[in-house]
Image 1: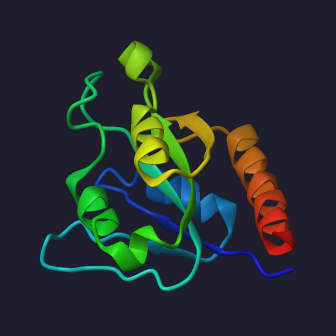
Image 2: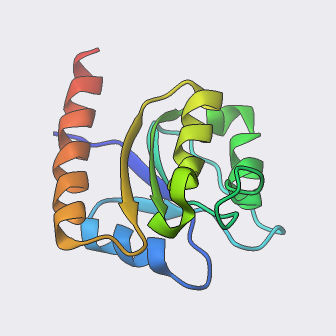
Length: 137
């Protein structure tokens, strides 16, 4: 069964990168540098960390906003998964809520910081089910 792609953003902390590596799926990283761009010509699920220290403003990383402002990229997003910090309270993983609403795609999963092995397993199996359902539609 062919799965869609995962596109993700991770800063120099590499937290989201390490989570995505544990998934063992095809994935492409949105560049940290503003000089570089990424094109996503195939359907993808976006995995994104939440910024902003508990505030809605600034919760979605600027690089992710720039990536999604490209109409060709935006038309291929099929879902979003967000990382966050429960210390952010009500703003925990709010980047996923914001992207889900703006791009009108499902918010598929949220996990804290690096995620646990259970999070990795849940996301891996969830992506398999998600892409299987997408293939039927």
